[in-house]
Length: 77
Image 1 (cartoon, one colour):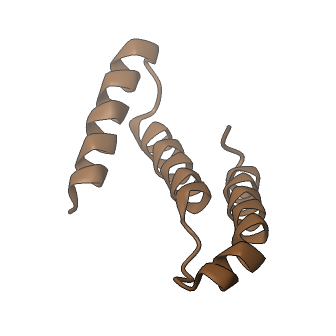
Image 2: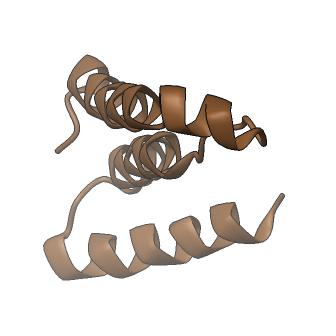
C-alpha cells in the first residue's frame, strides 16, 4: 500500500472519531477527493514549447473539468 493511501486511512480514522461516522464511507470520500485533486494537478504532458502554448490552456481546463466530474460522479464535495 502506498504512503498516500496510508495517510488517507489515518485521516479517515481521525474523522471517524471526530464525527462518529462510518470509516469506509469516509475513506472512500477521501480517496475520491484525492483522485479529483490529482486530475486537477496533472500537468500538460507535452514538452514542446509550441505544443504547450497551443494546448496548455485547453489542458488546464480539461484537467479541472475531470476533477469536477470525478467529484460529481461519486457525489463527493
